[in-house]
Length: 200
Image (tube, rainbow, N blue to C red; front, top):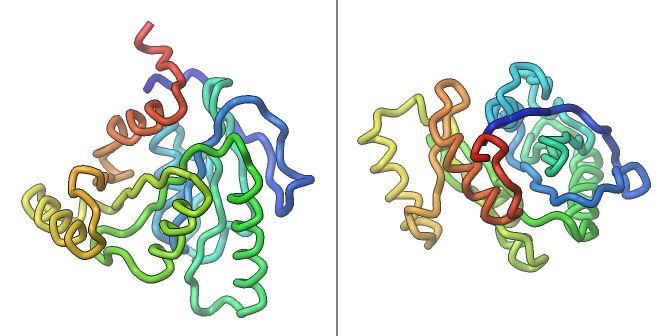
């Protein structure tokens, strides 16, 4: 995907804050510190569009980004950070659930997980929520640069068996070297029917 434009639109915690746009949305979710911001920056080929932080729980709002004036990428707050107060985790959960259940233009949810750690209960709850809400999950396993290609293949087979998903539906990604970037854009384009300006 050729990126001609990538810019921040706005942040919000409730529906009245969210932008009213006609184009499709793809959201990105994952555990705190799993690399969501780095993945979005890699996707849009910008180093600092989304602020990255080594501190889990850094993203506390839903952040909307405009890509090529035809798609919104939406960065959701991370989940599963044990040191955050239960009340704050509950607030984040309500915010995410409110967004997922009330955005008709939301067509897909990129669920990003660490390939070294695989899929845990929090991840599976989110994947199942997608099915219940009619949202297409895209399962992405990041930090692939930590493994050789053979190790990546083996790990993907293991995860496939664990969660009962076809191995070729699991995307392997690295924000460091761009592995999986085009494959992920292919999935997003299939869902949203947006055109690649570089293909014209």
